[in-house]
Amino acid sequence: MRKLLKTMRKRKVLSSFLLFTLLVVGAASGYAAFLMNKWNHALDQIAAPIVPAANEIHTSDYPVSQTSQTSDTIEKEEKPLTLLLTAIDERSGSEGSLNTDVMMLFRVDPVTHQGTVVSIPRDLEVSAEKSGLETSHKANYFYAYNYNKNKETALDETKQLFSRIYQVPIDHMAVINFDGFRKLIDQLGGMMVDVDMDMKYQDESDGTNINLKKGMQRLNGKQVLDFIRYRKSNLGTAESSDLERNQREQFVLNELLDKLTSVNGVTAWGKVLDIMGSSIKTDIPADELRTLTKSYRDYKPANVQYIHLDGTWESPYVVVKQQDLEEALEALRGQTDSLNDSSIDSSIDSYLQTD
Image (cartoon, rainbow, N blue to C red; front, side, top):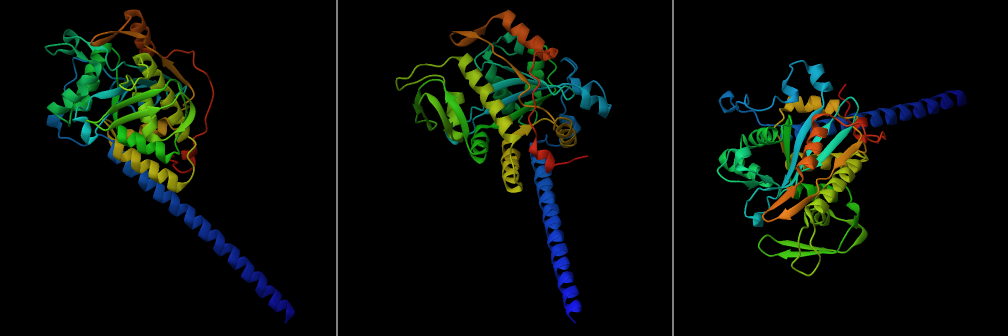
C-alpha cells in the first residue's frame, strides 16, 4: 500500500512538472507569436504603401540605385545600402511646415556590418541649377515641397533629387516624426547625455520650451529632442552652430541604436514596435523591408564612422568647403575602412528569428 501511494505521489509530481513545462513552453510560444504579429504590423505600417503603376516615378535621369541594379535577391542582400534618414516636426503648432530638421545620409554594409553617417546641415544651400526650381533653397525644404505636391510620391521624389544633387545612389528614404522619437526615448527609459552648453529658448507659437543645463544628466524624450534641435536662444544662453547640432544628432542616433539592441522583454518590445510603426515612414515595399531587416539584424551600431561637415554661416545659408563635402560624399559612395570592429549583441534576435 505504501509503495502504491509513493508511486502515485511520484506520478503527481511528474505530472505537475510536465504541466508546468507545457505552460512555460506555451506561454513562450504565445509571446513569440504576439511579438511576431507586432513586428509584422509595424513593418506594414513603416513600409511604402502599394500604389498603382501609373503613379510610379520614371527615374532614368537619376543615378541607378544599388538595390535596383539586380533582381537577384542574394545580391541585393549583400550590397551596401544607402538611406536618407530625416526627421520632421508635425506638431499642431509647427504650422505644418514639414521641413526636415534632421537630415542624414547613412550607408551600411550587410557583409562587414560597418556604416558611415554624414549629417547634412539643414541650412545648406541647394542652388536652383541643381534642384531644377526657380530659386535656391535650403536642403531641408525639399521634402515639404514634394509632399505638398503629392504626398504619395514625396519620399521617392526627395530621394531621387538628393541622389542627383550629390551623385550618391540613395536606395531609400525614411522619415520619422519627432513626436514618435520623443515617445521612443521615454519608452527606453530616457538617455544619459553630457549636455555641452546651457540651452534656453521659448516660442509660444509652436509650444517650444527648451531649458537645459550644461553637464551629464538623464534626459527624457522631450529633453533629448530639445538637445538635438537647439540652435539659438532668446533667453540669454549662447547660440549653437550647425556643426554642434550635427554632432548631437550623431551622438543621439548611436545611443538610440545601442539602447534598441539592449531592449529586453516582450512587453517592452511590443511597445517599441507600436511607436516605431506609427512614427516612421519609408519608401521600402513591405516584402523588401522584411528581407532587409533579416540582412541587417547582425548590424553593429558601434561600427559607425561619423563625418562632420564644418560649415560657416553666410546668411541665409550654411556654407561648407567643397573639398570637405566631396570627401564626405566619396565615403558614402565607397565604404571607408577606418571603422572600429566592436560588437553589440542584439536582443531582438531571441524573439524575432526569421530563418
